Image (cartoon, rainbow over all chains, first blue to last red; front, side, top):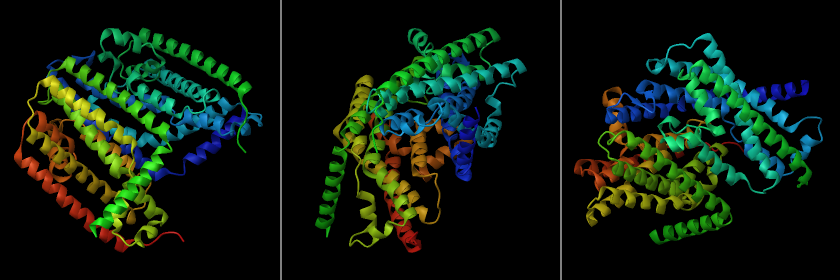
Length: 267
Length: 267
């Protein structure tokens, strides 16, 4: 366990180098929120309805705000392409020769990245949420908060396992970068990042809301929005666990079978 | 004099084409993800317009036309100038601008036209198809003069975007930073792709006024779409054309000023 902690510590130090730039970038990330607020105002005004997709206007805005949080847990920038590159360029050798598990190594790395991100992003996030406070529901109860945090942790694992699996496809296909890119574009839609999935027509909705993408982003966001009661929250969390196990086993199997094919190209 | 610049331009474009042909897979993936992206956007628009018939005075067909126009302007800009603008700040940072300055031709010309990215051009036919689909949908009667004006405004829009982004890139002489031009471009796009009218409701219309009259990024796609499928406002057409010329002039002045400040970095 100690070696994974060392990986974690090194990654932590690495991330703390670019601080000032990070603050600017985090703030800029909220600019589209203004557009989102105004667009949905226009749509609600036009529809003359109070609720669209079971959400009132304020809840719709809050949805996009909370989405930033659940994305912060679930998104794994470049993880899949990094793994695929390690495989293709033969870099994987480096890890195989060490008494360390490659996926475990990557988890430590990502936990460190996320931790630094949360600590540094806390101030800008708090400020933006404070500015948008009139759209937000009140504070959740202690037990709901606990469930939300737990669900976000699972969202991190789903994101990690899914992206690892994509990257490990590199064992079988030489060039997976483009495939990964297309999947990421689809994920924007399927995870509820583009708009809440409850707006979809019933047939499509019943398919999309059962995919792992929904459990990675959409449901944790609804939990933060306090749109799920305890029973529904428990159901979401158990389904998240199922997806973690399914994707995690798939990634592990892909890893073991892939290693048998692995030829360690490159100098 | 002009023949010489024509020859340089031709040579630049030939080189870009050769470069692009060595990454053909890249081009195909771009086309695929572009089409996927449009399908998702269309689903989003359909979802919006099952809830409302109008978004601040834009019907579904008009909205789709706006999407097509926006894609057309932005992909033309990305193909012709984005890569070049991005490279300007890189050249300044690394000190390699010297190699451009010593050449016997206008440095602004050399910097602005050196490279074409062909992959964004894949969206051009797709966005035109989207526009045609939208005009069929609303049964718009379009005369040749409208199309001519539309084309003129598209060119004007590209000039406005070029002037703003190039000016931003050249400020790297004074401000060294990491949060770069790609961020700025991303946020410009995410603001400009919506109906301008939605911004009237923010800060007493100040934001709308700023984005229409001061930095006219909203008019880049809204105005050509207006001319084709909504209303023809002669004042706005003249204003946008004039502001394109003015911004281009300002951009050139700022560029010359920046060159005087430029101190070749590093060795």
